[in-house]
Length: 116
Length: 112
Image 1 (cartoon, each protein chain N blue to C red):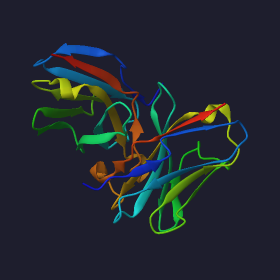
Image 2: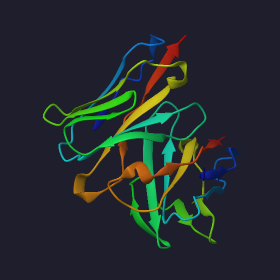
Image 3: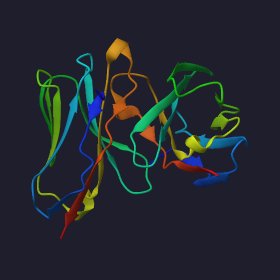
Image 4: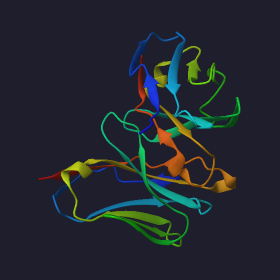
């Protein structure tokens, strides 16, 4: 069964450093998403991406964040200058369509980001 | 008032028990209601979704939505140890957005 993959599984970085989290969505999917989950808290939406542009973003997704689909398979989340409060699990998701039928949104296993 | 409220548990039940998981919400504009299951060190996996008030059944799982009370439930019949996971409710729909707003999740432990 096809699945969303994410690398690395755990990333440790120093405050102020840039990090890039990588995702390989399911191959025929068109919509891509990033979510984060701070330890013990809710899963929170960050951004959705379609046709090489952001289609929706939350207020969390400020100028420190950016997303890119650099080639036909990868989808990346970049945090330019990490802060302690960026420490969280980051989930990538993909779906073949965008719609109310959110059974089409498949999540990856997540990257745990630790900012020291 | 938080948009989606969910008791984090943990909820511990014996194998075979009927489990009831619940969420309340404040935004009456939510139209789509979902339940996700999340195993340790894994991403959320959609279990069920509903659009309107009422019940929806899928095997041992039943999702129930009461829009008038702003209350949703997930029932698990004949619970198994493999059901042990965190269950997240989520909802979407205000302003035509399909982006889910999640609850905190309830940790369920089914012991043999």
